[in-house]
Length: 98
Figure 1 (tube, rainbow, N blue to C red):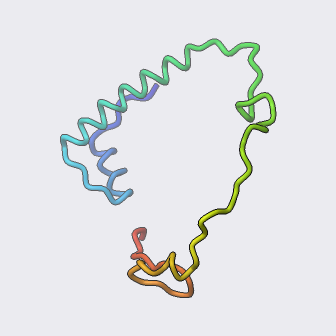
Figure 2 (figure 1 turned 30 degrees about the vertical axis):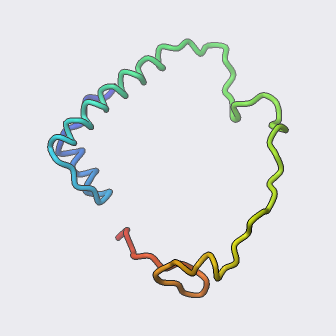
């Protein structure tokens, strides 16, 4: 597996995601990363020879799912009445990604 990511690398990733992380939080993330890598190493040890790859986890078609029933439909007016800003039937929110 890879080595534990440096605080600088994790801080850079957090900055790209627009997060501010303290040194304590970065320490915790590093510890969790070590645990995750150990879990992935365990999965690598599973013998998968003679096991066919699966595209879908169920062998049979999933026919047990219920049909969707449309009930309690809100009108557009009711759905938008509590929104601070709307335009052309859509809720306007501040831009959060640059």
